[in-house]
Amino acid sequence: MEYERMKADPEHPQISIVIPLYNEEGNVEEMHRRLKTVLDDLGRTYEIIYIDDGSRDRTYESLRAIYERDLSVRVIKLRRNFGQTAGLQAGFDHVRGDVIVSMDGDLQHAPEEIPQFLAKIDEGYDIVSGWRTDRKDNAVFRKFPSRVANRAMGRLVKVKIHDFGTTFKAYRREVVQSIRLFGELHRFIPALISREGFKITEIPISNINRLKGKSNYGISRVKRVFFDLLTVKFMVSFIDRPLQIFGLLGMSFGTIGFLIAAAITVGFYFFGWNIKENLGNLIFSVFLMILGVFFIMIGLLAEVVSRIYFQTHQIRIYSVDRIDERGEGRGVPGA
Image 1: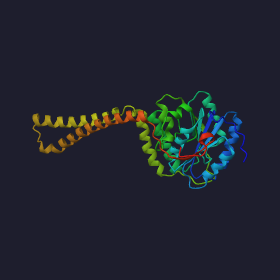
Image 2: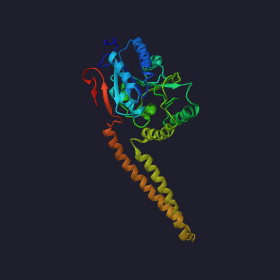
Image 3: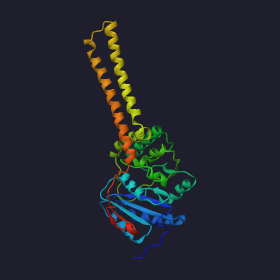
Image 4: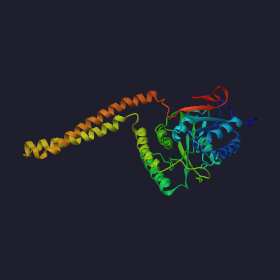
């Protein structure tokens, strides 16, 4: 089969497109066709990295067919479905471009809007995030929880963007090299890297109804997003100094317990309080002081874990089945 002419430097393309997919066989060909039209018109070198996140349909077979005819395509096949965050991290770990654009593979993100992201990167921004100003999602299960999460995240980490949840973003290479994702944290990348001083902006994007296939999002994501909000707040504010939050909790509980015990002691010696009548309060004060010591010990342990985290920081949250790429890496299993 003849290969299509590609506009990509295989060693160091200017742009890397990262698209995780799960059961998207109905959208793959149309997605690729539109991507090629946009990218060829840019006049820049590029690569397209598709990540098959353990699809159960023929998504990988469709991606493999595209790979066979298009030299700009690389395909990463994961061993099972690890989730969108893991799929993105797998793509980020293998990009070679100076600018990375991530997007969904269900055609709810329009490839035709990629030049707008690149224009903002050219202006000097490090992250350009999409903002779905007119969302088409279900109001109860998607729009309302998303609005609450976005507002909460904006207040928690002081990052002034409206839409943390969309995958449609552009990054400079050094941004994706500085993060390691887990859980559902792909949606909070701007918050995670805000502590490092990168310049962040957002642009309005269209939000298109899914035309083919079934959405992989559900109400079960709400609870995961809530806990990830707490995780992000901790990572942004306290990951390198966990003793500050646990120590503060410990000192607060310990101080309250000490004050209760002190009040009972003063009352006993100076006001004739009966210890038996205040036994419950006394036990409660001792409990609070023990709890305070416990939180301080947890904080010290977290300090040690934090140091180990920063020194290792190489744990992967996915497992690769095979990578389809040209050169030494073509079709290498289990890279």
